[in-house]
Image 1 (cartoon, rainbow, N blue to C red):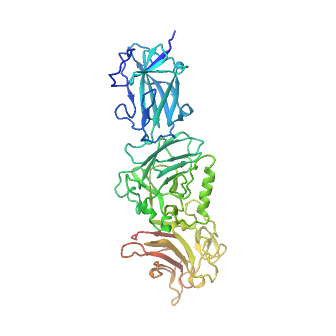
Image 2 (image 1 turned 180 degrees about the horizontal axis):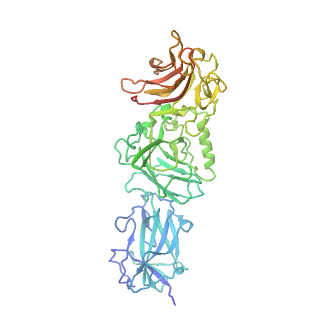
Image 3 (image 1 turned 180 degrees about the vertical axis):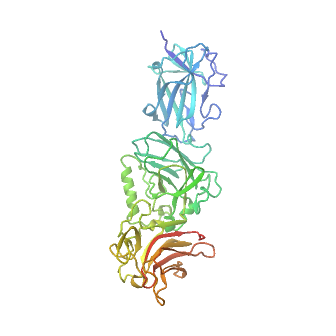
Length: 554
């Protein structure tokens, strides 16, 4: 018959403890946690009855992980002839709902009587997250008795009545991050659930909506503490903050599963102090930029601005954001505030960050804030690069999130009014084209216009730029000698309305890219406004307005 078993924890290196039951002479016992062993995870601690120690008061409990607890047969403990499994064979696994959380600790109940433990074999309890071992403890099995022996304290600890061993352990925030980072956040996103993870400082986080993952995915967020001046190499006008400090805005995001998310997730980072010192319109132009390395090539892209209600620096902060009950209402409220009238935030400069402290992405890498140095407006897509601008739409403020707004120098003429339109009608006969142009005339009228008949379109820049370009297509051939020699023009002005530079297109029915460029004495762009129209009475079509905040050689 098989006898009941008791478990004795064997801690390597403990030679001063005494027991009235000798240990198996052939067993090499081991234990690993933050206070035992070498090269251990400093955020993992065994708790009683495994080890008689308390959770560290200096660490924050990492309650959002999904630990895996394995019981393995490690082979003979007494003699090579013992009948044991191949070392490392899993005899019991606890995951998901088997592992519970209470009192700032993870709990698993191992019903030892269900596994027919062999006193001649050695067993190991191992805790993993994201495939990484956090800690382990070897246990000794002896015949008879109703207790386990903790050799650290030489104390007998009763098993539960059904011969159950309570396994308890503490994981601190930082277990999934690089050792020594100043700020870390971690958690596991599960299919069918919303998941919100925020770092211990509250400066960075992520929202993973229901449907974004198809399997359990462990996520870590950690500050980058070792950059010099640039969080993302070669990214211009970035605001990374102070590495290793409380003002850091440079973070790495990682997940343990390959590939991209099934749907977009929202990452959020609080901008650094220098960013909040900017004027309100400039602050709203900042975007989170993402660095990807593909085939040893750096790819940098800007994320679409979105609210991050899980961060306190976000003007749409909601403590309950992410719960099933609140998430859709929170998002609707936040997005509603974006497109609705903006309040005047006078009490705090941080609340001036109207567009939110987040960005949408489908993958992870390194992120930081920067002022976009260039932009392209094709009048076919909205600033998010996805939403279509319908023909006939008014675009006066459609691109304000890019720092560009449009108006007219005259409300009179062939197409009276103040609206600037996306117009797909091309040419004097109003022939429809597959793309929108920008025009003073609504859909149904030719998009071509001239200064003499309708005035000019004016583009105003929230932050002065160094270069502006636009495609111009005069629609009539060159006129005879003595007529108009220019087909279209683009003229730049500074913030005070002083003319800076002008470029004209020739009067030929060929698309020409007109560019004006100007910087001040500090080599900073000072173009605040540009005007464009067909020259005199020559109609012209305009499309693809681009700008750069740094001078570009052409």
